[in-house]
Length: 167
Image (tube, rainbow, N blue to C red):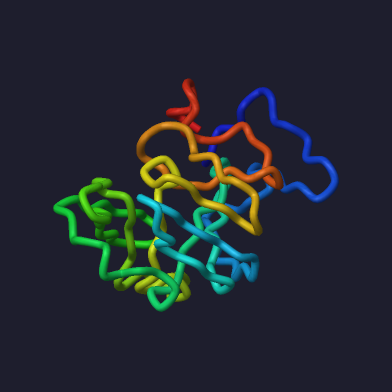
């Protein structure tokens, strides 16, 4: 069970609290325009992203491979396992002379319930130059492990901030 922090921000009009998101997480189709930019190139552009919504985490956006420049992604040696989604594989992003290590990840064969993100790519907002959702600049989820995107329409506090290890 996720331990709740003592101070949860109350959402305003048009906002969501990450403390209202479920656990286990759910897949939610999202028709807003999502973009990822790196080294002067648009790496991804999609109106068909899927958000993963999980208690205490800002949403993670998964972009269909047809909406991403997958030729710029190189397999990394990194992998991780999520108890809900399964085995993730990671990718380095290379554009010209610029390299961002482990900038993206994907679940090639997610566990049941997460088929909507199979083969889709999620990007760390802090490892690319810019991510947007409907033109709003994204802030990366705090810490180095989680890859949620903080937009003006979500409030926390968020997992990954100092002192959140046991949430």
